[in-house]
Length: 337
Image 1 (cartoon, rainbow, N blue to C red):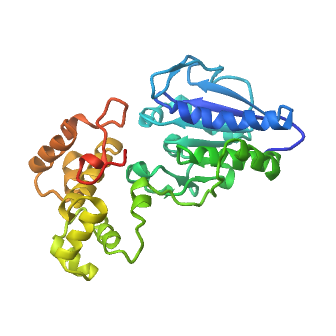
Image 2 (cartoon, one colour; image 1 turned 60 degrees about the vertical axis):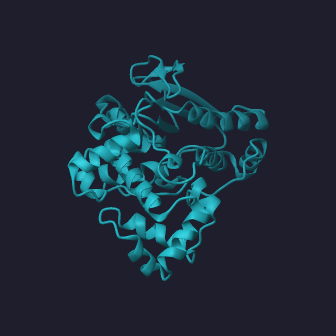
Image 3 (tube, rainbow, N blue to C red; image 1 turned 180 degrees about the horizontal axis):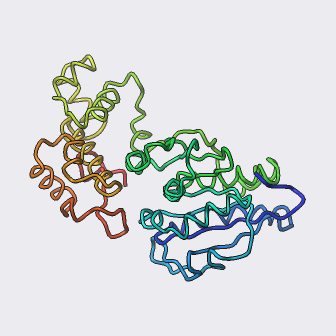
């Protein structure tokens, strides 16, 4: 990174409509705390939008910005903040051109949450690591097959700081502070944030998996892995039990005890989760999605999808605040809420 401890480091935050307001706070607050602890302005930041007008966050808050993209200010780091509707940002040619220009001008250009998809659309993710939020991994892999998508927390490699989103952004920002101003200051910032620092290559872990305490030798975990790997060609519960090496009756009891649902319900949940991701996050046709999720009939798939999400798949093609929401507790397993 082009950071030197003898000067202030300027961060540019590009707010894309539908961005996470929480993510903006998680970027700025560690920088503020670093300045406060050091009792000097080590870091400064500016917010930008394509046209310089206020941007609406995903929670509906109208957020004014400091500059349009045409500003003459220069930045050590530029971070694209996006969450919902990132595909619209990926079609903003002015934004894509500006990001490429900023990198040529010497800025490290990175992203938070789905901002990495915008970098991919700008052709800036070749040979780069892209930590992606676990719920968007399938969609990003489908749309950008050449991007090295991972389920890790964040990456600082090769001038491309990227956070998968949520609390991983705090981890990334403290790492950036450490790189710019020293690990001692970064550790102090983490202490003030009550943050248990994690490494960028730590894998994301959903609440569901954490609660289960699943291990590689757990028959339920093994069965779920088989289910997840065979969504396009679903196997019978009997066959899955045979592959795991236990009786179907015993495996059904284990599913009920650990997950509160039978094998068929869990399998259905996994298939509908994949369907929901592909419908909202990709340009695959509804027929292609139906086949990818193991449905031989488009009619059956559409009916099943509408029953699960109260909307037909053809009317649910965007990942926006107003679109349908997938909830595991409403699709065959206990709720994670």
